[in-house]
Length: 68
Image (cartoon, rainbow, N blue to C red; front, top):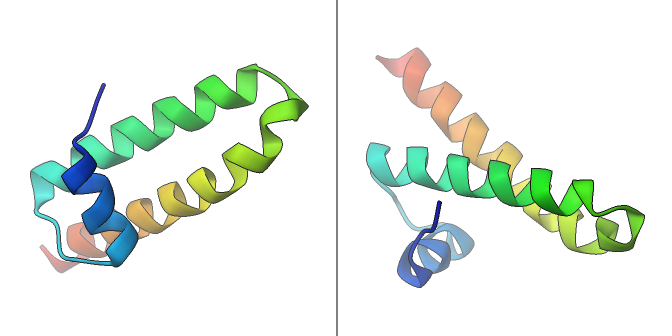
C-alpha cells in the first residue's frame, strides 16, 4: 500500500486525519516496519522511528474505537 506525501506530512506535523486516512496509514506503516525488519539488523535505525509512529497511530485508532 502507498500513502500520499501529504498524509505523511500531516502525520509528522500532528495534524488531524480522518478515519480512512488513519486506517491507510496504519496499513502502510505496518507493512513498512515488517518489510524493513525482515531485512535484518542493518535497518534497525530506520525501523525505530517508523515503529514509534505506528504505535502512535494505533493508539489513535484505539482511542477512536473506545469513543464510539
